[in-house]
Length: 246
Image (tube, rainbow, N blue to C red; front, side):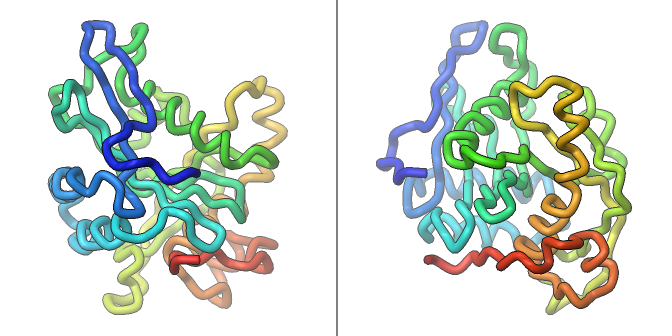
């Protein structure tokens, strides 16, 4: 993904009621004026993950392009007001987009674009950007979901992957705080343009790469851990990505 000049939106849209929505990239030192608001939304929506705002700040100052990754921190405004954000990794090695955190501010959750709400509009826009980067063997978008969030996400087209998945409760801080795990559901948005039959054929090929994108690349878990090795399968043999600048 090319470097975006400070202030220039990646995407722009007009809501059904006339508001101007803009999406900005907040990595590589671009658009750092949005970092404080992004961290505020993260803290308010995911208060138990106390170390993530510091990570957002650190990532914002580093180049987006890493070793096998493009680190994405996307910020949305509606008529200049804070509206939404998403933190994600474009995993060039695994050919996935992994969604880590994101939220929409309450006043804008019912904003629509051709009848489609802001969340769906933003998701489609992000996926179109990723598809320009991963042009071959693009496996789609992956996220983790709790049981509480799953019903809402399924109405937006996400597909639950039928694997027994678990993740570290303390995310990337598991080395300091201990490798306590929790059961989550990995959910998947197939690449655009697939028929239901094509999506069903592709789905089993996603399981190991989806798990490895999170467990090996994002959380940095040891592949010698039996349950990690089982979930990631052959992907443990693929060179890992690195969050260190290339």
